[in-house]
Amino acid sequence: MNKIHPTAIIHPTVKIGEGNFIGPYVVIEENVIIGNNNYFGPFCIIGDIGESINFFNSARKGVEIGDNNRFTKQVTIDSGTVLPTKIKNNTLWLKNAHAGHDVVANDFIQVRCNGIIGGHVELKENAKIFLNAIIHPRLVVPKSCIIGMGAVVVKKTELIENGVYIGSPARLLRINNI
Ligand SMILES: CC(C)(COP(=O)(O)OP(=O)(O)OC[C@H]1O[C@@H](n2cnc3c(N)ncnc32)[C@H](O)[C@@H]1OP(=O)(O)O)[C@@H](O)C(=O)NCCC(=O)NCCS
Image 1 (cartoon, rainbow, N blue to C red):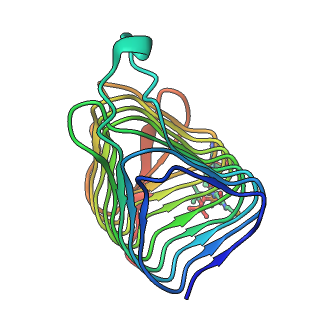
Image 2: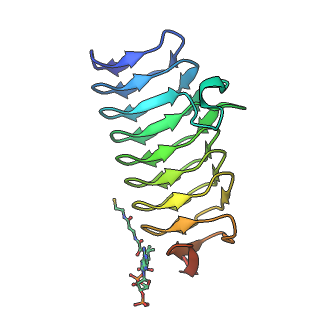
Image 3: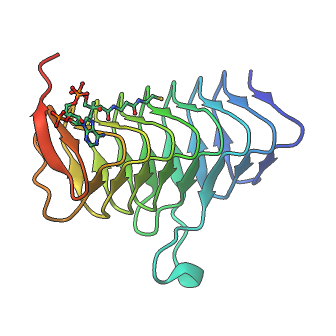
């Protein structure tokens, strides 16, 4: 069974599995598929049109969300324009985190408050984007990479697995061995 707050607005095409919580004022737009046991806190907006250059003409490929994901509040996950935007399993998105169109977020990634993930970015398993960090569109953030608070990852930033990055433009601080 799903718990859906009466103020949530859910497009009739949305497919929802079991055990999900959809909180107050959440908006879920067309072509969104949601698995099981996900939590959407107040004011999340899932599957609204991708903010690409062709904003008003962009295709709406929707969003696919797996299982056990938490979107605490005011998180925005935009619709894909080429393929669906994909949020896999066991991910965590804190207040005001944003995934642009066509993002792929793999298992166990975390995007903390105000983390901004540009369009077409792939976050590999266990990557962590800390407070207020920004990832340039179309980059791949490798496995277990940590992008420190306030960092700005630009096209030239060479990201490696387990790397911890800080600053603008982002630079390697250390390797995370934990
Ligand atoms: C990037 C981060 C993981 C590094 O942690 P750490 O390895 O323990 O680093 P330290 O605190 O020992 O700092 C090492 C150096 O990097 C600098 N530094 C650390 N984080 C920085 C950041 N985000 N931006 C710029 N410089 C930073 C420190 O000033 C210090 O500089 P110094 O050697 O010249 O004195 C951490 O600072 C960070 O950004 N944490 C964010 C936590 C977060 O977002 N939590 C979310 C809670 S909801």
